[in-house]
Length: 168
Image (cartoon, helix red, strand yellow):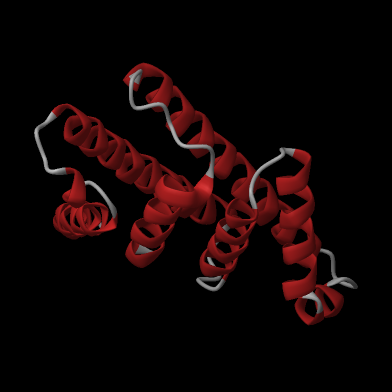
């Protein structure tokens, strides 16, 4: 789950949506938390649908046979309805499969979805803060591109790794 948080946090921060305005950090924070709530609600809805679908006796075989197609199609339709990017749809689908592979109860699955959503939001907030600080510092323009963004993501992932060892 740690890998999902770091990978999806970085991808959604860099390419997931319209770039957060660095001149107004409050708007960027609002956007990050709104995306995290959308991610949590979409993923939780799909987990709930899957658990309901597999709880019906006659539909269990059908659900297991078409799990990839059903969850993929449902996440795609929900992402399109919310006017989200394709990366959002892929992140939701992979998170749903990662949570469902653990084969735990509904509340435990929701707690995993909540932890992943919160971790992604925390990663994006840290990344936004570092990008905002970078904007105001005197870093050479040649270093303000991808090399520094990847370095920042690496430092954030190391910090989150230390936190996850304490929490999980």
